[in-house]
Length: 299
Image (cartoon, rainbow, N blue to C red; front, side):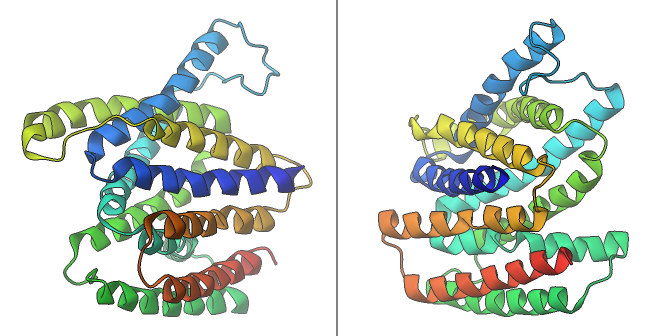
């Protein structure tokens, strides 16, 4: 069962990236992000209220446990980190091909592991070092392909946006290592969705609204709310798979990273982007490097 849950989670993550690209094309970034976040929060808010009112059984899979003020602050901090990652990634995805963005995002586990080495003094084995070297080599070669399309890492700010998004996403992964050991996973998922919606309100009012006439107009599309909804179910299936006593976390992590292949393939078919064959070869190399990292972490 856990294998199928992880597989469906990966599929949803792939379509999550495609929905973002479809929604962001020729559209205002911050309102798209706001609507997608609010659609996720709208799922959890009734569950929080019903759980508080004891109208949901405590053994229900959708029951959200009460948490302390300190835990609320910890989740708020996670919300800030994740929202930072999402803002940069949404801007990057609007201006860059999805077949360029998806492989860079796939390198997330590499930066998480490097962060763990620096912060937690983790020791690496041979397979993990091989995975790091493989990922970095193909990542570097991949950036040269972007340069041929006019997306130079030296001069293009949107390339830096997706790099910052990936690094801040890795920081969130490191923080999760501590957070999820102490707080119920559904409580984290629900409250961080609520806090993100609250954080977006001043961003919209102070940054986007005063300048909306000078930026890309916002156009509502039905794909936008499904960004948040898709991510909610992808994460729920992932957490449920991880909670299975027989689950192999290394296999789940590898499957979850497979979602990038769906995003890459679908994006290539829909948006007719350039250098697909070269990008696919480098994506395969990055995926092999990440697989070595994950497998090396499990032995």
